[in-house]
Length: 467
Image 1 (cartoon, one colour):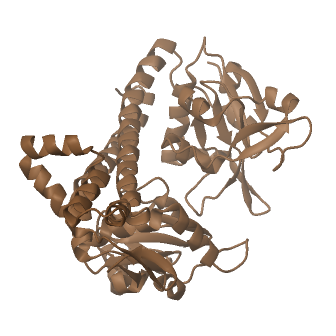
Image 2 (tube, one colour; image 1 turned 180 degrees about the horizontal axis):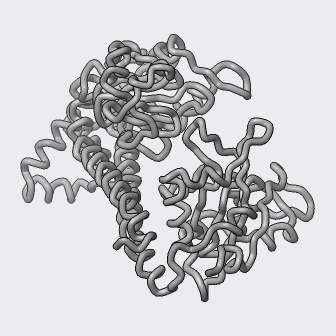
Image 3 (cartoon, one colour; image 1 turned 135 degrees about the horizontal axis):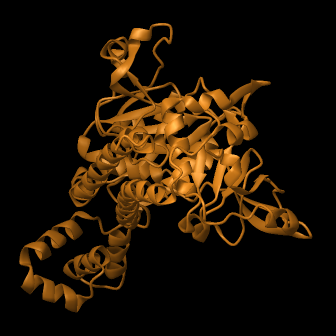
């Protein structure tokens, strides 16, 4: 029986390159261990762009089927071991550009595809992380955990060596992973649709500006509202006429929506906005809660009852349906004032500032997160999308204090952040427009959690030949 080293075709450490372009350097995407879960969630935005010599890139350029293994930087205390693994797909390469390499704290592992399915080894490593068997290959040095890569190659044997059986098992897990990815892509599209509507109504003020322009052109109020209907629906006057005949109820709803928007822009505290709208502090729109970590010395405070949200749980999740830690009922009740209900808005405010998610069930957070419990649940989607705007993300980071090492946006400062807020009527209309979009996102997220749990339960049984 052969160990993993027997199947190695090529292995090499990663690179990092330079931050800026210099002579004889080329642009390259560099995948770090922290990017692994994001890439598996089809989020390609965090992978840094660096500049490296072509000679160094050529020996490290990733191919479909390669594995990247993180060899330094993990932490058992944080629940994240070294030895995390990423399987390189065509989609990853297509989205990251011509040259893609692993980072310097990672190692490329290329296996002989004629003898072994590298995706099978990827799943075997995933199972080792679930059971924490991966921990035996981790050692501690100067406060940083390191993965004993060479020892791993020598001591790990494929649990199943028959290639056709490996392929069959990979097909099973691929079908689950592909469904998870499809749901993730659908959720990304749904959020983009909601973001586009939000931007049109509350950032660009398209319906209001359409009315303002119509009035400026000397048109009647009725014609101004027709212009707003065009801005809201994207339809021409002829298409609106056809809609009024074919779907009168839908036309009437569109007309009511257009009527709710003002027909004048004004300046409030130096900010241009529709007449009748206001700048409101977050504390005026909901109760602000800063989380807290229950005492680690009370082990009975931790269990499987109440989600305990930390910043890593917020990456790639509109609704937080999966958390790395959970509290017992006793642990949650020990800080009953820190409970946040479903559809509360969580915002990361320490170190990583500006991540925004919504809760899917009653939850707690740690002290690195400020949460908004909306005064009116119908404002949840409006608040979420307001805080997700790129300009708001930049503003949150600019407000954070503490220098470049550790950003800190304290609760008092966070509470005073002001956002342009329309009338309750328009917020309610917007809620009705996007409610089912967000419900579908939540449904897909819950299904992904169930699928991932099924996959993780199957992993050891299939890999060990029990099924």
